[in-house]
Each structure stands twice: as C-alpha cells, then as structure tokens.
Length: 268
Image (cartoon, rainbow, N blue to C red):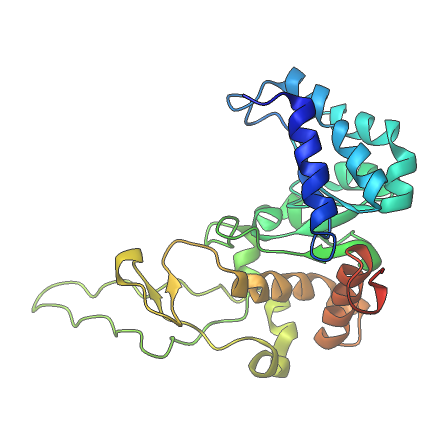
C-alpha cells in the first residue's frame, strides 16, 4: 500500500496537472460516526496535511465535520491562516445554533442539504446562517428531504409527474392505496407562491433502478436536480430577509462563485 506521503504527493500532482478544473481540496475533515472506516486518532493525524495542499495551490477547502466535539474546530483554529487566505465550506452541516456560531467564528461558509434540514433544531440553525455565508448542495445520491424531516412541511406541494402511473383502482371491497406523500401545508411553504411555477423544475417521474430511462429519477436516490427542494425550504425560512426567491438564488450563486473562484472570480 502507498505511504501517506506518497498519497499526498499524488494528490499534489493531481491538482497541479488539472488546475483548470480542480476547485477545492477535499472532501476532508473528521467523522466520528464512521470510525469503523478510519479510527479517530488516524483522522486527526492526517486531516491537517490537507491544509498544506490548500495553501500551496491557493484552493478553498471542502470540509466534513460530524460528531467531532471540539476536535474539528481545534484543528481549524491551528490553521486559521490558511482558512483566512483560502477559504472553506463545511458541507452537509447538521449541527445546532451553537455549533453554527463556532464555525462562523472560524470564517467558514456553511453548506446546506436535506440532511441539514431534518429537525426543528436544524431549521433554527439554518435560519441563522448569514446569507453571505450560505451555500446550497444536494450531496447526491444521499441527503434528500424525506417525509419524516421537519423541512418536508416547507416544500411547495408537488403535482403528479408527467408519465407517472395513476394509482390502480381498488378491488371491490378493498381499500384504496394511500396517495403519494405531499408536504403538509405549513404557512411558510406558501411564501414561494407565484414564483413556484417559474422557478421550480417540472416534477419528474420516479422509477425503480431496473426500469430507469432518461429523464426519470431513480426511486430512493437523491439527484442533482433536487437542489430545488433544498432551495425552496431555505427560502421558506429566510423569505423575510430578501426581496424574493430570485434575490436569494442570486446571493447563493454569487457566494458559490466567490468561494470556488468561478465566473468573474476565476483566477488565471
């Protein structure tokens, strides 16, 4: 097996040879819920090496922090100079308001997806992310918004997808099958209002993996197009702070381009 030093050298070369397309160093960080893959002490030993790559190539960091107590924040503080110069986003944020404030003090951006929106406590935290520090993601094929999540009630009700089969009629004396889940009508979900038809993509048919065909979603799998689901929930939470959903989308888009040096922010 290659040594850690050889692996780091390979990453260094990969970045140098593809500098026109590489936009960040990562995903890297700490995850104490997955120590069966890598013990916590090994994670703490090798996570700091990624800061060397970020500093050398002037790239932001795409960061992972799950159930790490103070360890993640401590390592970030030790490399505060790199974070200040290169930037970084903690993706798939699932913490509470206290954890959010600690990350913001480190100058980090916060990435939000369906897993960031599971509980009422999560929603309170997302409501406090400064709009200029907010980024949206899917983390597909995972982290979709599910009917059990607190955020499900904030989604705009979905019409039936074109091509979707109608539920079969019940047999005589039998019970009708339950309708597909629709978001409950939380008043905040109505804030998208007239913008829904304009901004949200048309609903797509969802099929089993073995029946996949182009233009369909794979049932049970999150997809990049589901970024719209995340956006509409975040807008429902933050509508009072912007002039409309387009302004929020523009703010998040501008932040994404700034952090990853895209568009007008691209560096030669």
